[in-house]
Length: 501
Image (tube, rainbow, N blue to C red; front, side, top):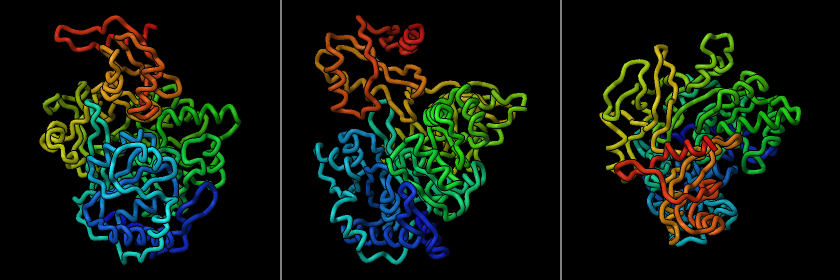
């Protein structure tokens, strides 16, 4: 089925129900949400977009994000949401690799693409072309799609720094949405979902289930994350659910305590996307109450691997309460979970190994990348690349992240990508990028550099090639990098140097 049918059904059942807000202002009910999505679909079809084609969204959080997303699905195409924080050149690669027929943009994002070479047609939501799309004759119903058809092409960087397109099907979106009701939280038409985190990622992946129940969708007027704005909106609407990176939770706690805000109106905060320090979640739960739920997922199994329920997060009387908080919970209903060796051989309970996942929430493979698909999918199991331990009760604890991933402010930074940008400078002989603990961001990017060059030059070089959040926050100049007998840089030793410092 086409996941967009949920919007059509809700519009048929309760057309006047409030659907989309910009701040506190209602901009669409479910009837107009459906009608505009259907009109965009009709316009896309007129542009030659056919079922199975890809259409990208390079937009900040705004009401038109949802309208264009469902318009793409109504037309039978697959959406390619692009992180709005990416550099224009990075977005341009995704457009080319996905073969997107066109890209919808919001103010600012269009200019970022205009500075890059590329021939993908751009349609800004402020353009006359978009106004024409909203006024176009609507399609009568969402295009028929099979469950295994591509719905969402999610780009996540690999260790080489070359983004890979995770194929997310209509079946996967359905399983993850229904799994939310079964394992994560309840939702109803009385609720609101607040998009304070990027809609191109976890926050956006929760939109479908809220459409299914007729909940309201709230886009902050700021377009992003602002603690006081979140508290004001939650207090105004009264039953707010939101997805947040751990760093967002930590910042919300600090601001709430400093400003005397209780978080009234926040019903559920689902957190994921990086390490949540034990002291931080204990402090947050103590201040806001039992509103927190932790999930663990990857783009390859979006939002759907494990869950630590609000009851478990708040169960201070349990003898292993802190141990559970330090982990990521138990397997969600749509997947099997086990620990194995690098070749997929199962390991016994309590043994450290690679986390493996199987089920209908797991991707069928990467877009046009059979080699990477074969490496990541073994005998139907997703090899996550994360290391962990399962206890006898089925609780999973992450022990380490493989592939040297850095998670800063909930966003993934892959060192190789930053290293390649720095190595473009002729005076940089060698470079190695690692993560350093940061109280607010979880981790920050640090570059060890061999070469005679100034920090300002390196900053300018990086900002010209990669997103700002990926740029190093510190440069450490060294005579040589520590290496093993095979010539491989010992990043563990570099991290130890940072820790000692």
